[in-house]
View 1 (cartoon, rainbow, N blue to C red):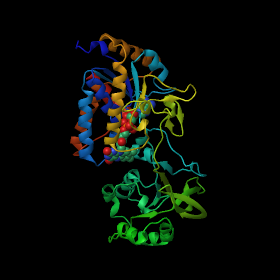
View 2: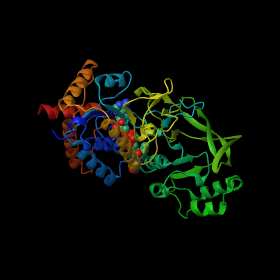
View 3: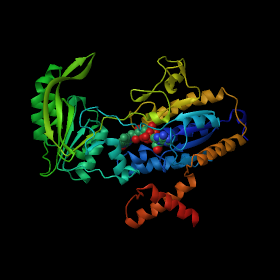
View 4: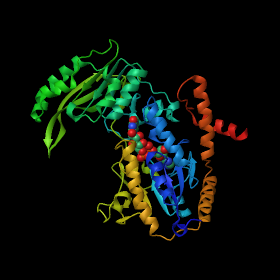
Length: 450
Ligand SMILES: Cc1cc2nc3c(=O)[nH]c(=O)nc-3n(C[C@H](O)[C@H](O)[C@H](O)COP(=O)(O)OP(=O)(O)OC[C@H]3O[C@@H](n4cnc5c(N)ncnc54)[C@H](O)[C@@H]3O)c2cc1C
C-alpha cells in the first residue's frame, strides 16, 4: 500500500452529476476510496439529462471525462440507488456504516411552486420534469407532457430558452409566451443560447410590448430607445410559429377549463422600482389574462428535503456564521439550527449547496473547492487500513439487500452503453437512449447472462 495508508479513508458521495463526479476525482486523487451512490441508473446528472439533447459535442466531451473518472479502481459506483427516507438507503444507515465523510451532491431535485390558485391544473408543468422528459430520464420519459398549441413559460433564464427550443423546434407549437416579472434588461438568459429560438421572435410584437411598458422602464431609470435597439431585431417569424415576451407580469392565477386543464393565465402587472441598486418588480393590482393550453414554470428548483438534512426555504441549512478558513468549511457543511452545530463529517457541493446556480463549470469548481475542505477534514482524522474499504462496501450491500434495493455497477453501465452505441449505429444517429428503467435493466441482465 502507498505511504498514505495511515490517512486513507472511505467517503460516500451521494449523486453522480458533475459535482459528485468531479468531487469524487479530487478524493481519489488524494488516495481515498469513494462509494458513489446515484439515483439514476446512468451517471452524469443534468449533464446527461438536462443539457439539451442536440449539444452533441458538449455532451460527448463530458461523458468522456466522466468515464475516465469512473474508471478509477478506487471509485465504486452504485447506480439506481436513491438516498432518503423510505428509499434504497437512508442517511442514518450510511452514518451507521461509518464512512469517514458523506458528501451530498444530489443536485436540486425539489420542485418550486408559485403557490397561486389553479397551479394543480392539468397542463401546468415544471421545467425540470419537461427537460428530464425530452432528455429521456425515466420515469419522466414515460409520462405524456401534453403542451397543446399555446404555451406560457414563466421565467427568462437559459432553462426557458431550452424549453422554448423544444416547444418551437421539436413540438412545433404555434405560440410561446415568455412571462417575466421584470423587464427586458433583467433577462437571465445568454444571447448565444437564445440564438436557437431567435428566428421565432415576433419583433413587431416585441416593439409594441417595449413601447407599452416604456414609461414604467423609464421610471426605473432605464433608456427605452436603447432597449428597443437591443431587443427588437429586423427578422420576421415564420407565419405559423412565434415567440413573444410579456414583461412586468407576475402570474396570479391559472384558470382551468371545464376538463380541469389549463385554459388561461391571469397575471398581475408590475411596476419596476429601484431598491438598493436593484430593479425590483412591484405589483400594481392591475390584472390581465391570456388564453393558453399549457404553463411551464422555469423558475429554478430547490433541494430535496427527503434526503434528511436540515432544510429551510428550499435549501439545506448552513451555518449563519462563517468559520475561519479559506475556503470556509461552514459554507460546505449542513447546520442544525436546533443544536446550533454543523453536522460533522457531512458536506454539500454543487446544486445541493446552491440550487439551480450556474453551468457545469460552476458545479465542478464548487465541488473541487468543497473537496479541499473534505480532504483537510480527512487529513485531520485517523486513517483506515486498505481492507476497510471492502468492509464498508460489504456493509452497504448488506443494508441495500435488507432494504430490498438492487444496484447497478460500473460494468453494468459499460454493458448498457455498448448496447446503446450499437443501437445508435443501426439508426444512424449520434446517440440512442433507452427511455425506461425496465429496458435498461433488461439490457443489462441480458448482457450479464450472455
Ligand atoms: C435544463 C438545463 C440545461 C442546462 N444546460 C447546460 C449547458 O448547456 N451547459 C452547461 O454547462 N450547464 C448546463 N446546465 C447546468 C448543469 O447541468 C448544472 O450546472 C450541473 O449539472 C449541476 O451539477 P450537480 O452535480 O450539482 O447536480 P445534478 O447534475 O443535478 O446531479 C445530481 C445527481 O444526483 C443524483 N441524485 C439526486 N437525488 C439523489 C438521491 N436522493 N440519492 C442519490 N442520488 C441522487 C441524480 O441522479 C444526479 O445524477 C443546465 C441545467 C439545466 C437544468
